[in-house]
Amino acid sequence: MQLTTSRLMIREPVAEDFPAVFEIFGSADVRRFEGPPQTEAEVYAALVRAIQCGQSEPRTAFRPVITYREDGRVCGTISLRLNNSEINEWEIGWMLRQADWGKGIAAEAARAVLEFAFTQLEAHRVVAFCHAGNRQSVRVMEKIGMQYEGRLRQVRWINGAWHDEFVYAIVADLW
Ligand SMILES: CC(C)(COP(=O)(O)OP(=O)(O)OC[C@H]1O[C@@H](n2cnc3c(N)ncnc32)[C@H](O)[C@@H]1OP(=O)(O)O)[C@@H](O)C(=O)NCCC(=O)NCCS
Image (cartoon, rainbow, N blue to C red; front, side, top):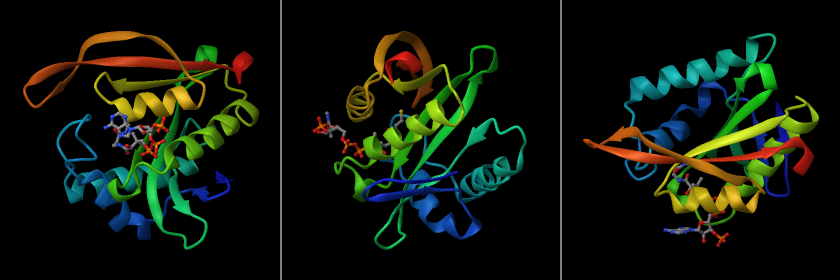
């Protein structure tokens, strides 16, 4: 996968992306709604899996990095994985470096990935799950046209407590 938007290039990850990816997933602030910050070993293993998923055929997962076109700097990651093959439903998710929050980067990248899902993968539905308290992520979903479908109660165990999740989705007809 390689996608270009006005400010961004979304491309397959490479081993050299490790420092930038660790800055994202090793951050307690970035991981606040997901769980504890990840260790170097955890991030490295996930990066290796993200690189390897590019070699599987048929492709059931994409775990690209988001970079700035102007200087190639990695500002985030975005994922798209097959969630339900029977109905061709894919799940999208995003994580940005904290210094790059608030610039509309996630929505810009997510729009490009949704277009890829509906045009290249012929997705029927794309879903996203987020912590019910994650206002920024809810706004991103709203801005890209995803609609609220429901609340999953007490499905995330973080810092010794249960938390709810929202489910948002967009179907091909509405893209
Ligand atoms: C969620 C995340 C990807 C959003 O990316 P982003 O590029 O900063 O998103 P945007 O710049 O489009 O901002 C999203 C919206 O949140 C709003 N926002 C920012 N901080 C907010 C806050 N504390 N409370 C409520 N809304 C907030 C912004 O105003 C913006 O809305 P607007 O465009 O209507 O003004 C980014 O914050 C992030 O990486 N967070 C940590 C990881 C994470 O939670 N990932 C999602 C897992 S589901």
